Image (cartoon, rainbow, N blue to C red; front, side, top):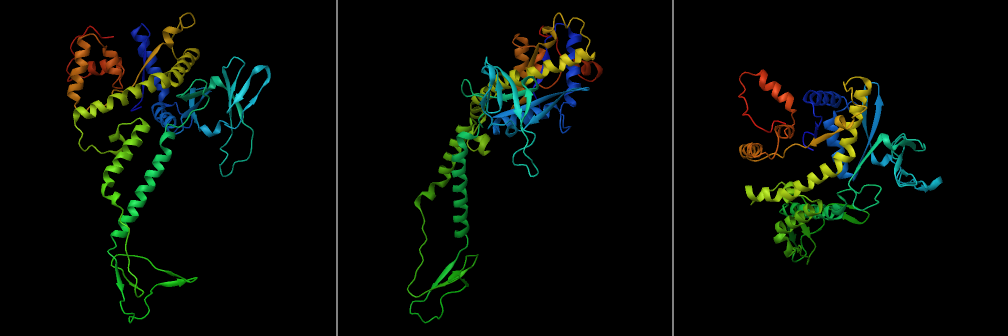
Length: 383
């Protein structure tokens, strides 16, 4: 997500595009129904839920001030509710379908089942037009999402137990304990500690010296595989990273042996996967419906001047969503590449500026208002 995926209206009139962008940005500041963050912060929360829970639910609430967004925890959509309805309709895991297989409603519980003061109440039926269900299905017909962490839950648990066992072994080895052996049995009572229920309670601490009974010796188990534990741990991290679809260094934070070229090569498939989620999941399931709801409300409320909206709504509802550009290790090369794309006609200033989180009209206004800002070179790709 980064700082947020920003809209770029596609209306043919420049002034209308600027008005649409300004209207949406003003709405974005107050988009959260709970007043905790803005629209860009909600994008991060939705993306986090998509990874952890495999799905995110967003309720569209219409108020006098405009549409508001409220995140619904996935467990509130009653997953246990599955039954047939009249006329071929049905409810599957809290999602209601009509006879044609279209989603028509979601059945939402008033409170979490495990809340401290929760009382039983039947789920509330919320029309599907007011709920955005964001998920990346793994197969056709999938109704609810699956956590992206599911493939690595068990391996991650085993890895955690392994690290705990290694830590305990290192702690015991660091005690530097000594055991005194009475070879002829003349040293008296060999046991020390507190006896509870016939069991002698004792332990180790730095500098501990323990007396053993006559004839006893102590030998600690030292498995040979611990000598290669570093390589084994790294192999486990590589397996976890592969299960998550991440480059290893993003999981471990270890850049040992990496260089500029290897880092870029490792990030290419990861960025392709991110773009697939952005354009294949977030835009059609979340961002595009929100843009349409906000613009339509602005027109109907009179906040947006759109005299031809009724006859030509697509001109106002058409919008391109541009995610932020990935950060580069060498920004100079990145800027040079953008300039080369502009000169070759492979992109436009509007798209290049929007990818940096700015509106082209706002940037041009600031440049024109600041006499100390160098003027950009003329380009045939201004739009």
